[in-house]
Amino acid sequence: MNETELARSSENESHPAEASATEHFAFHGNGAEYFRIWIVNLLLSILTIGVYSAWAKVRTKRYFYGNTELAGDRFEYLASPIAILKGRLIGVALLVIYTVAGTFSTLLGAVAGGVLALLLPLIFIQAFRFNAHNSAWRGIRFGFDGEVWPAFQAYLLWPLFGVLTLGVGLPYALFRINQYQIDNHRFGESLANSSAAGGGFYRIALISIGIFVLMSVAVIAAAAGFFLSWFPPEILAESVTFDPENPDASVEVDPAIMGSFLLFGFLGYFAILLTVFVTGFAWEAMRFRMVFNRIALADNRVRNRISAPRYFWILFSNMLLITVTLGMFTPWARVRRSRYLLPAMWLETSDLDHFVAAEADRTSAQGDEIGEAFDLGIGI
Image (cartoon, rainbow, N blue to C red; front, side, top):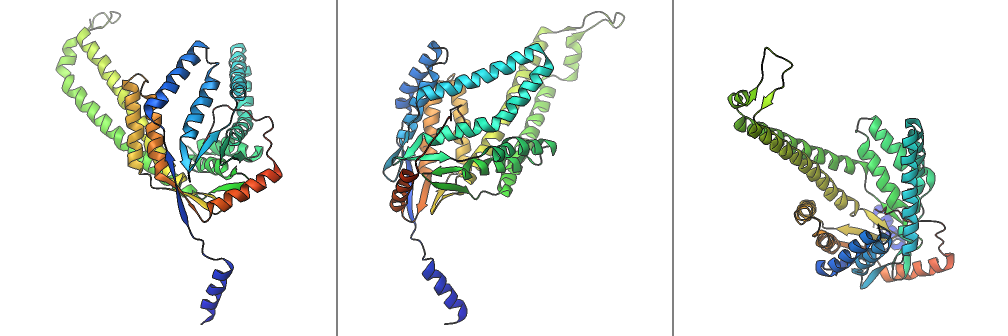
């Protein structure tokens, strides 16, 4: 046996190959069941002028957490509605202060906006801490250990860098935000880690830009062809009348042509919105697949077989159905998304039971304080 083989043998003895097991996620909810929760939440939130929305969020989270399963056990959401209501009142108070300041003077409004921007990192930290602390699996809570200065860099300095570079640095800013969010989350006492690289964000940004450009060209070409076929120059000339000898006289336009122009403008606006939504959904589908295929927690790794085109179609068709049904499809849309994503994800693990037992012991020994964290509806 040569020296290379001896070295490999020694390495294998000191770091034995880990037997990898696969634990799939599952989702057991259904649209009709969630609709009953959703409609009650909606009605009570309206009747209480939004106050019940804190209780509505707890009911919704507990439904989705309770129907999400991993390795035979379901997740738990442990938050108190009062804590969520407190967070929302803080958010409303900040918004009122900013609005009132702006009514007195532009300068005062700008100062209030600047102060609010500087507070954003702290707000994000508290919200992430609250959501993580109140999420649990097998009796072990998640946690978030992000600090203020890295949050300030992630949420203010890097986005500012992206703007100052005329958008070139924005994918890198999104990479840094993703890294900050995931690398500071933990399960018990084990920190998560994201191996998603900045290059991946640039790749999906370029694809998204390509989709936007192609759709924009198609929309402009279709609009130009439609306009020329519907409004040929001779018809436009006949439909507009004015007196060249009296330039102050009003120009009269055929009402039928004016109505056609308004319809054309509406269709153009819809086409622009559609282009933006399609681009956004394409970005989200690719981002989700990349990010949730590169998360590790000790010896456990999150993987997925999500199809970006199929996930895009679910997001896009959900939007269309919600629009057509005036929002009533929303419960089915949320369940439909979860029923696709969660079964397509799994955990690669060497010994999940041993890992969870060790985390339970470590967490019990060290304790877990949440302090004054609150919820503002912010999450990954």
